[in-house]
Image (cartoon, rainbow, N blue to C red):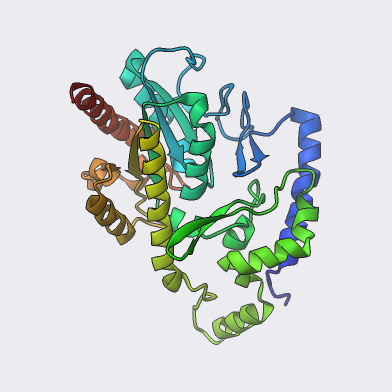
Length: 354
């Protein structure tokens, strides 16, 4: 029986497959929805449509929040949201996403920008915010956090983290802690043309060994030991030091939050942390929310805890408010947009009076 072993060659093979598929895709359909971007790993292409998801982007590369073109000259306050696929609204159509619904409820009083990108960590979301800030100049910005961010923020190569990757094999930056300060590790730029060559580079492999804790998944010896243990009747996963990394991961998240708040304040923008709960799966929301909220309270940083929105979920089946891959449905999007519409209206009203 052939053993299902994972190695760095698995990453290289997948990179070659993605490059071949890319050239065929471009010939048949044009630019993909998700594209590589220097300094972020990947992003959403402008004026793009995802072929399998009912998702479209505007001329600036943000997922659409209305049928109207982005109101770049609008005098209405601009509100931006940044984060992962939960913010982007994956698995559902544009007009079912919670940010589309929020734009509808706020009508022409505010302009909503959806800066979410699938598979992002808090690190990429923050970096995209700083990179695109001057394109939007928002009066209010929300940085999303979900429990999946804990491990994504530690990762550079997504396939090492997940064991597979269809669209996001490009190397992403990550923050590391050095002398209790965040330092940004920027890997070599990867794109559809150079992906395989960069991943094959000895320098890239050394960087991943040093800064990507999930590189140890490539250890054939550890995999063989784990297989032997399972064959003896024990269900034990390959240890990835997740528990030991948890404290570091939380400190990194809070460090990113601090940078986000400071960046926003320097630009006279109201920066707010948005906690995005998930109620099932491997990365179900846990006490990481409470730990981070305690840190935010100590520093007086503003936040919205969307667990408050789901206080009556016992009356619903899980499938009513979560999609198969744990994104919010139109129903839960309705709850969230109601809650945020009230919050934004009150907060901006209070700011204008003070």
